[in-house]
Image (cartoon, rainbow, N blue to C red; front, side, top):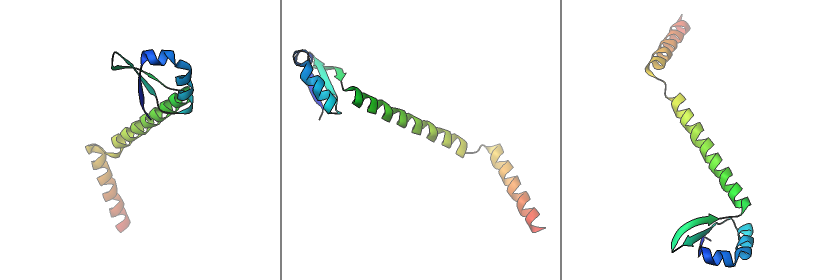
Length: 93
């Protein structure tokens, strides 16, 4: 459950919020003068988040490489067509 609390309240109850961050994966958003200012989360949740981000980055990079390699340029298409034609002619002989 996402919580937004004033920084002043966080400072007064830091031990309670620290424990809460260790037991929940959801971050706490600290506000200053009514606006979001900081995000506080437990280290385990932070590490999970970093792992997920790295995985998403790796998947996106692999996808981009696949797309780059999966679509041959004109010369590759011509070479492939010639090779297929050659193989078909050879197979008919």
